[in-house]
Image 1 (cartoon, rainbow, N blue to C red):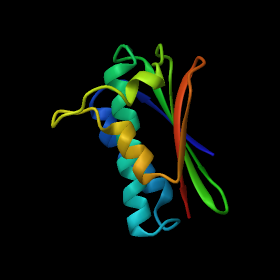
Image 2: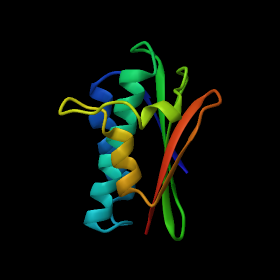
Image 3: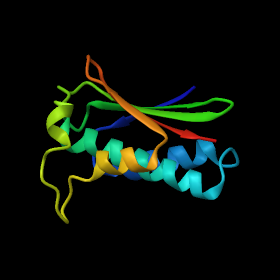
Length: 125
């Protein structure tokens, strides 16, 4: 497993995409690598925007490469959220699509709401 601690700042989102790309380059085809980068970006964006963290707080990005799958988790010390309400919230051109996108593009995903708060996804290799 590879782990990268990032600060809860907007610039962290690009850092997370680069870290995923660098860690998985050559292990996934270009389309799946692009999917992992996109979904990583969505989860880190959610942590930075919605976890209630200070900019100095950590957002951890964990990547595990298995024989058949890549597992990516974003872990933060935020309060978490009520999953049942997330999919019912309105979406528009400004946002609200992150977890919907994760559900559509990933092969599996989930949430561990116990502290620390974790949202993860898997892409089959």
